[in-house]
Image (cartoon, rainbow, N blue to C red; front, side, top):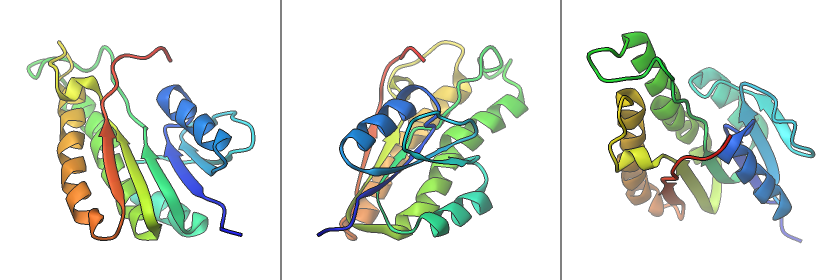
Length: 174
């Protein structure tokens, strides 16, 4: 009998992350849900986690052990704090990049070394990565950078049998 497949999903307390966690669970995965808030999803293993906290992520990765799937869906769109560069506060810029960009990199850094052969990393970006959105400079920059990072990781990790893909959804009701 093969080992149970393990998935880690960030941003699992709502929106796309919660939907992905439910779908993976329905497909037989043991789902570890990472978020600052509780997801309330039945039968997932919940971990309160800040994706911008590397030490916390490394401890969780060690605790969870080998995984098959990492879905990086945690993200933030600061409204109305985000905006055009001349009005965007450096605090809003830094917070947006810390969660949307650095947080994804830290998740990959923590969990990728523990991925089983034929593993999969899915990065959730946004349509903002490829289409200009007004008054969203921080968000747009962070989501565009995720597309570029995904391309780089896809090349780097393919040698280890790990697939890396990025999805760029449009607006969703959350």
